[in-house]
Amino acid sequence: EVQLVESGGGLVQPGGSLTLSCAASGFTFSNYAMNWVRQAPGTGLLEWVSQINSDGSGEGYAESVKGRFTIFRDNAKNTLYLQMNSLKPEDTAVYYCRRVGDRAPRGQGTQVTVSS
Image (cartoon, rainbow, N blue to C red):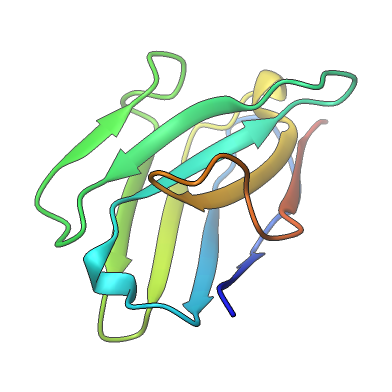
């Protein structure tokens, strides 16, 4: 069974940092490009945040997070990460990892709240 378990969220002040993790199991993690997506409170929409190639050789970012967030992965540990710096209130959302090609996230997500 494919499992993706997100962690690392929390409450942080504007300008702060967090690193999210996504532990993968049930499939060959190193064969898949991966995304981070997020869902802001009060919306039903998933916003694409970032993507990384299966071997970590290429990355992409939404304009809203470019220069502040860094996606990376450790295929030996079957884990995806998102380093988030200079956080803003508008980054408040539930963050999910998702395999490229999957329609919906499979995990429960991790809540990130940016507030003073």
